[in-house]
Length: 169
Image (cartoon, rainbow, N blue to C red; front, side, top):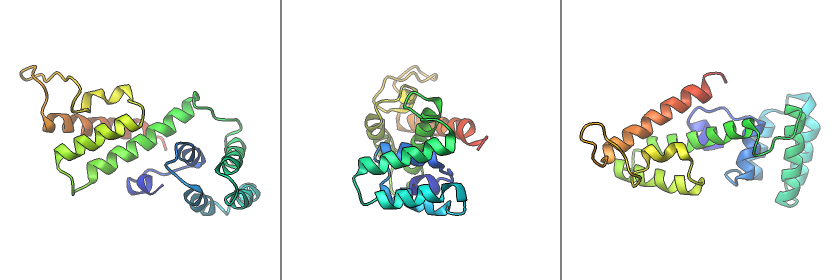
């Protein structure tokens, strides 16, 4: 959750659900989010149930979290649902922004980290243009793009995703 907050991306219950299912969040991360929403009287019983199942198995906790998501959104959200895809893209955006903002990494190292993340996330197709080892077309000489050119494509992608995903939130 910290990766999203560091990058000024406000999470919601579905963000928590996706993050927990993808193992980017643990029970304590979800509970930290849940307690920030304690004032919502409709969710207090669900939050208590989450706290109780926290010490049970991760599967039981996930079932309870799924009940909260159904309560909040009025339906079960599957991985094929556009809402799921949007939350997944928010996570991807936060992770990319974290890499981009890391002052301890060179551009070459950032490009390598992005390529590792690309692999970890199942090779999102729209990332190919900023993966350093993928064939690129550079409009200047139509030669293989260098680290700077590839890193610039990453920045352009991040800005585009921010406009698409964060403007209406």
